[in-house]
Image 1: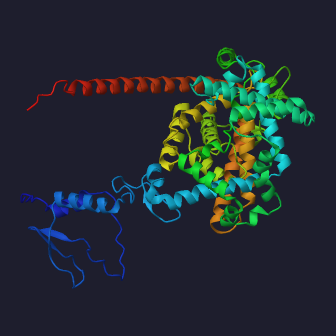
Image 2: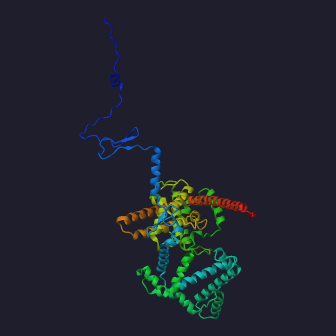
Image 3: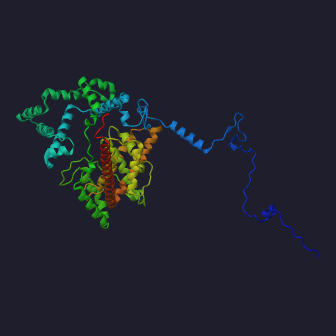
Length: 550
């Protein structure tokens, strides 16, 4: 028998017999393969790819350092510089002249005075438009302010003097402080007499003479008529149809000079009274109320359903009326929506992280309302836009995992959007404190009332702003955003109404977070003071006490 001749199989045959992995199906098409578009670098020369245009030339290849330097130069070219100081990078663009500037100081500089003065002029004239009140309304409102000041001074320890000191209306000079306190007391007494209906009484004449002595000018009927002359001139006109220039012409020369003087001194902010947030009023002392909240949080959740049932009743007694029995607080709190649906009808199993979205939404609301000085009617669309831009819980539905994350996101958007005023760097911290006030409520029996009131006001503002926009184009997109944010506010209201105990937990956590941030800020301020003092000492040491004469 012939021996079997054994031969080794070729590798190609062996792989064909042993490879059992699935093969990629080859699809045959009539289309020609696309030519290579990437250039190939060989020996320092960039060769054009196949199919490249005939007009392309060979160019030397660039190394990594050359590419980085080229990118940096392109970035420097694309980064615009402030056109006023020509030193800092520009962050904003003037909407009037399209000039790029870095901040408020350059915007108010003499080189840009034409636009800035026109802006302040329009702001004041717009304020005059919005006021649009008659002489009687102006007098009545002033009387109400003076009477409210007098009533508050009667209940404050130290009277009018301590009240004015708390409001920083009285300086350190003793004579000036005495004159201001005396003048405010006389004016408030005069308003009380005028409201009672007494005219030309001996007491009123004595008050006018005393005010004349304090002010160093005559306080007569002619002077009062001169102050009310502007209101009379504007009362018979349709201010909305007048342009800014026409309104400016209505002012007398003295009034125009007075306005320009206020503009130069930077005292225009004193024309508009500062708004006091309604959520800062509590029937109990702030610290004791927080202790009560902590005690309630530590207790088991008993009687939770009863609390939810009576929540709306407490809201109508405490929130809608502005005050409850035994309370001297007269703050105009927004009314609560009457048609808040049940949470179960909106979501069967809501996420436990909804609470932090509520915090984020209230943060954007509180910051925007404070920045607009409580005025939401004249700048309704701007208020809604700012609130949505500062709250990703309302604008994009972002989910947060903690109170700190919800607050930090709002603060970051304030800085990124350019809403932070350099003259008021503590505004974001006050907004965080405002959320703590809102979620604390008026008292321990009404922990959710303020939260429901704030969300109700935000819902009304969004609905009103939505009604002013058309359904087409960019306004239609903006209108849809307002609608979605309104629905989210409605969901947050339902959650707050159904989770009163959780709102109390959030209030305690918010006050704790606010305390941590305040301690960090105070520590940084102390460290800054120490560094500044050390620098001053170093400068003193460098000064030569004895100079050698040549």
